[in-house]
Length: 122
Length: 174
Image (cartoon, rainbow over all chains, first blue to last red; front, side):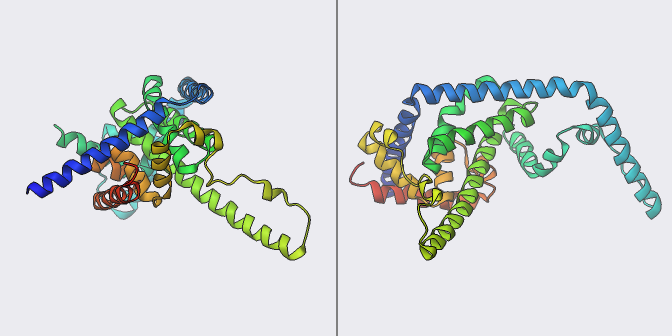
C-alpha cells in the first residue's frame, strides 16, 4: 500500500514536471509565431461568421427541400413494405434540415458519447 | 469562439510542432483545425469545442503523417532512380528533413526541455497523442478516447507506456 502510494507520488511528480516544461515552451513562443496564430484565429472566426450569414439566405429553402426528399423517401419505402411509419420528432427534422447534417452523421458516435457524458455528470 | 481558440492555440501549436518537427507545418495544421472547428461546429455548445477541436487536430496530424509517408516513399524511389541513372542534382534532395528539429528552435529551448521534446518525438504516435491529451491538455480518459478514436482501455495502456518510457529515457535529466 505504502509502496503503491510512493510510486504514484513519484509518477505525479514526474508528470507535473513534464506538464510545466511543456507549459513553459508554449508560453515562450516567438512573436512571429504568435502573430500567425492570431491571424489564423481571426481568419477562422471570420470564416465562421461569413458562413453563417451566407447560409441565412438559402438555408431554409435547402433545409425544407432536404426534409421533403427525406420524408418522401421514407414514405415510399414504408408504403411499399406495408410498414407503420415511425414518428419524426423535432430533433430528426432539425438534423435533416441542417447543412452540417452529413458531418454530424459522420460523428454521431461522438455526440452520443457527449450526451451520455453530460447525463452522467448530472 | 475567438476566446476559446485563443486559449488553446499555443498548446495546439506546440503539439503539432512536436509531432511534425516543423514550425510551418504545425502552423498549417493548427490553422486548418481552427477553420474546421469554427466553420463546422461553432453552433455547438462551448463545452463541446475542446474535445471536438482536439479530435480535429489529431486527425490533421495523422493526415500529415500519411502525406509525409507517401512523400518519403516517392523520395526514396526517386533517389534510387537517380543513383541508378547517375543523374545530376535532384531538387527532391533539397527537401527539408521532416524529422529534424529546426536550429533556431533547438537553441532556444533549454537542455531539459529539449531532451523532453526529443523523447516525446520518439514515442509511437498513439503514445504521443495520449500523453499530450491526458497529461498536458487534461482531458479525462473518456474524452481522450473519443479524441483519438480508440477505446478507453487503449488510452490507459498507451498512457502508462508513454509515461514509463519517458521516465526511463529521461531519468538522468529529470
